[in-house]
Each structure stands twice: as C-alpha cells, then as structure tokens.
Image (tube, rainbow, N blue to C red; front, side):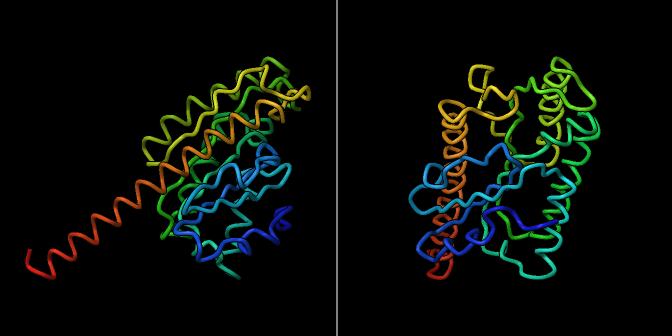
Length: 217
C-alpha cells in the first residue's frame, strides 16, 4: 500500500508547541476536512487519507509504520473514518468484523494511544457492485447499528455527524463541501477537544496527587 496522499506533511507539522497530537485516518470521506477547523488550543490534528482505503489496507499501512518508522508514538488520539468501502464490497457483517480486527491490532501496535474514535458512516445512494442505491444505504445504516455494540465492548467512541441526504454531494457518496464537510468538521473538532480536556484534567489530578504524596499532605 502506498503512503497516504498527504503523508509527507503528516507529522512534520506536529511539534512540541502542542500539548496533544491528534490524527484522522480516513478513506476519501475526510478528503476535504481542514486541519485548522478540527484542531484547537493545545491540540494539533493532522488528516491523512487515501481514496478507496478499507480496513485491510489501513492495517497494512499501520503494520508497516510500526516496523519501519513509528511516528504514531507521538500521537495521542486517533479518529478513523473507514468502512465505506468495506461495506460496499463485503457487506456490513464482514465490514464490522474488519473494523473490530483493526481496533484490536491498533491497540497492540500502539499501546500509548490514549483514545480512539470512529466516524459513523454517512448516507449513501451511489450503488456498489453488491448493492443497489437502496440496499447500500440500508447497509450503511446496519453497519452503524453494529458499530454501537462494538464501540461499547471495545471502549471507543462513535462520532456521528448526523448527515442527511441534503448534506451529501450529488455523487451520492461524499459529503458536500458547503454543508456536509462543515458538520463533520464540527463534530470531529468537538471530539478532539473533549479528549484534550479529559486528559488535561487527568494529568492535573495526577500531578496534584503526586505532589501531595511526596509532601505527605
């Protein structure tokens, strides 16, 4: 698998100036997500995507990173936007198995990552080889339902932008630039901000308890 389209800049912009580092790993659904719109004070979020990517290709990419040049050691939070292609090519039941395997493997490869998120699938009317327009949308809905159970059992969060058909591009697949992208950016921004605040508070509490312990307070 080739490196993601914007991989050359993926970690070059992640510096010590930020307290936390976030990363979006996506197929083409987050192609036009703007990094400045999903980052915030003390957290820099990078976006890396590849059109046509599925869970298997993502796992190959991450396995290669862990062997060669493990940049992900610097990442605190990862949000996946995947399974659009898994559902289209294999159906929702197999897609959710691939999702589960990816999450399991990511936690094995990168145990220092603090939290994981997954962007729920958007409405879709563009048919695939397996499904017509109605079937593919119902398959996406079923996947999102299955994702709820997996997220609970595997302890990761689902980010749902709640896109409707009017928020989609006329290709029937991607979010529109005018509305769909903005809704996705807003939800992603809020999720990363929540992670930053949660772990900032955790670090403050830990520092306070350590200080009290050392000083017998």
